[in-house]
Length: 304
Image (tube, rainbow, N blue to C red; front, side):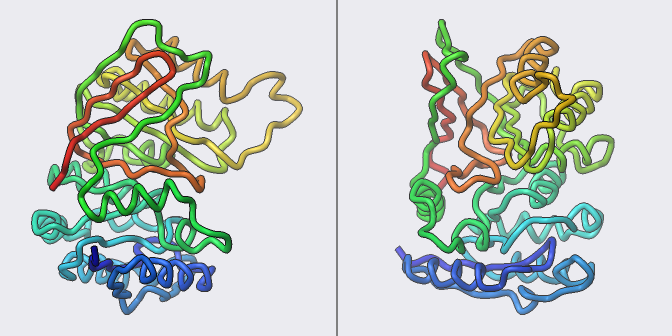
């Protein structure tokens, strides 16, 4: 089923243009009609163009009428744009059927849109790092994206670590929200931090040592955010190295500490983050989280 895909760059400048071009070719090979934003390869310092250029790119994405507006890459740059994002135009685009897709730095955009408009966006792949890899793109990532594009996706499932096997079935319903932990922690105390109570919070990060992950989680804890959630789901935390003076302090330590300071269930292993195998998650949608034994599911039903 041919869909229109609009590709734009709202954050860091594209450094690997070959990867983005490969990603474009693969999206076309899947049968989709692809449109590139005029500023997709723009560069200003570390950004994909100056602030005006990137705001204009977001405006064009919202006005494109495309079925999907997807980012080339994350990086850094959206937090400085938050006061200027055309939220009404983005909301109208979503209402007309445009799905905004991305991850990493795009977390700031997604949660700001949720806070400002209540609309749903999608945590999912980026064109360069996911569709543009030199090897073949991950099959699960691609299948989940196709489900999103065609409106067929109803949820996702994964296997919990053996140590987290659930003795009694767990079920929780609430708004799914979150994304990149560093970006979410940076929104605390701003107008663009969603006020989600009774939600399902999912988190991931990259190149952050476990002590930094714990420090950001304490920010969410002390701000009262974690206490208001029905469940916390941890995705992938990758690309960090232990140091000698950790002396046993690791990711598992952080997760055990988190379980000790919150009352809600904490699950790990969600296939989402800066990893090849990533599912697509509707930020701002009402979902059901279910777990039994080692099987965990996030279910949201048809979105179209």
